[in-house]
Length: 248
Ligand code: IPE
Ligand code: IPE
Ligand code: MG
Image (spheres, rainbow, N blue to C red):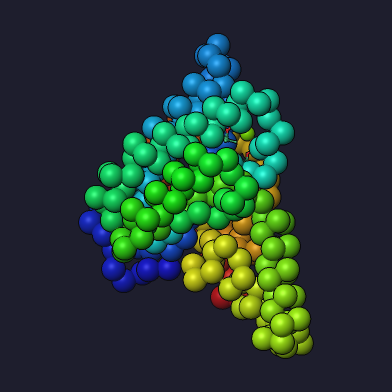
């Protein structure tokens, strides 16, 4: 939470505090396209336009980390042409948008099983990481081939292996040790989760990091999610009484 240094846009919107870490489950692209009698891929393409605006807005309003659910470990179940289309769109996005993101000081991170991705996607990911690695602005953390349960299992494997090597006392494993073994090591906990399209579930998104997050479920489909809608969510977020189990 950054309560002191507000950006000009944050002030203009009447914000007193801005969440440090926002997670976004960009849902509803397929329905958006189907409603218009278009192929689902057109919805994903329209979703990229929203994504560009949301990244820009997040940066302008002073959010530190924006985690974006781009492709889940379960999304491989979709028809092969949709999976292929999404994979191509990812590569296209990274090569096309990176210069502007870079110019705005954005630093890209990824979470998920990136090594299991096909070579072109893997290369595009490396390109994005390399190109933005020295930037100090908004961190855009892209969940790609990501599942929270897989992430936690991976952390458990890492900690167990360290214990077997004698580098770690198993009895001394703390919540912080687990936090540090997740993909999000070094990032603040998620303060706010936004899932568009009216679905009210996490679908395996950042289970550990969302322990005390606030949730918003706007009805709009992702391609229709606007800056105005985002501003509304942020204004409502600051009214929430976050007690963390205590009393106020
Ligand atoms: C979210 O939109 C984007 C990804 C999962 C990549 P969907 O494709 O899930 O859209 P709906 O939920 O079918 O409308
Ligand atoms: C979650 O949306 C994954 C992404 C937005 C990338 P889904 O559309 O895949 O989730 P379910 O199947 O409705 O739970
Ligand atoms: Mg969906």
